[in-house]
Image 1: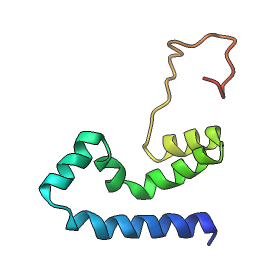
Image 2: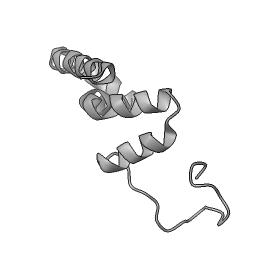
Image 3: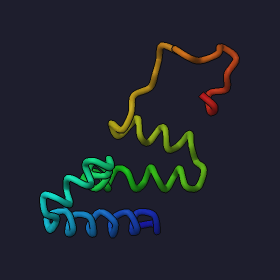
Length: 88
């Protein structure tokens, strides 16, 4: 098991321990700020965030798409025909 997997597992375990201890007011704050989904889905978000942090944008995009974290825009709307895939 690699260091990334170990870190991600530790993060997920920590979040799973913390979430049940939050009161309604604390959960509302997380929801208002947009962090509640992040805490609920840490096992999927952490690996993607790690890829982005080390500037592996294409791999992070592929990861997010394959884990249900995003959907590709196949229509090409808003894209120039000569635009690079990575920049898109």
